[in-house]
Length: 452
Picture 1: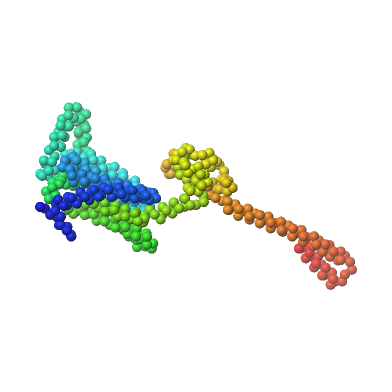
Picture 2: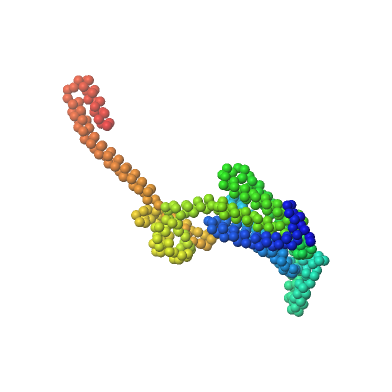
């Protein structure tokens, strides 16, 4: 019986097949568990990307499990194509997750550029002609039934005339293009394991794809390493270390899968391991925690009103203080028409409103489906900032200023009355017979009094 020697243990072919199938089943269910765990956390764009990466990982493992268990060439080819697309989706969303977590500016470029590239590449993979599936000698029996079916379909199509010929010619042209740009798919019997293997001789797009993925993983690893060295916060260093492990592991496994001669596909297992590590990190609360909890705390605990409505002024969301001010909102469902008192707050043109003896500054924002073009309105966001305390301070300051003015007015009046008498009596005395010295003193009193 064929045996396989690994670093620390040896497995027979039957044991290896059992392990592979078990790992694929685990790779299917671990992402499902991970999605459930992430859904319990506060949602963000990064969490969404990680959930989509989990879904793609589950697709990859499903497809590879089909490859392990099937012995039909068409089923093998379909399963391989599913795995190929699943790996593309896994890397796409996982790389976007890592960029979003680290707030990298060009994540938007990747989110647009990569799908455009896949629109060119994936059709070459899925629409190739079956004649470019190359079987070795051991695999010829596998394809006999599929060839008979293809011949029967071809005979029926040939009876339909020139239209069917044109379709067949178009498929042949697509297949030739796929052979040049993507390479050939090989289905071969691995006698050691007693299973069929599906491999590809890469074409131009095939190597460009894996080259771009490897380059992005390497760049992310270096970028994360630089942040890890500079970071002083222990929790964030721990998170960055997990990301570096995932990036480095995926990069090594990607290179290993392309150049190492191993009897099975390593990428489904590698993706499952990375997803498992990220799931454990999420479960202990290290990802999607501080930032999202901070946003949630601000939204729920501030003494300001936050209200969100759709484009028809239907209820979407409200914070705790808004529901306290308008208890009726606690029973509202999504898109339910807002009550009249709340609707008026959205539609009024006043900048300040009074509710229950408190004063609020009103701020209304229009939300668009595309913030860049701002054509179609998606909804409205209303914030009522409590300015009661500020108004009280202003009123108190104004009252203090009025009191000061009244005091000065009263003091001025009280001082002016006796001073008029002093200045008048001094002027009378100056008109009489006084000595020069007395005149000087009285003149000083008069000038000072008038000045005062």
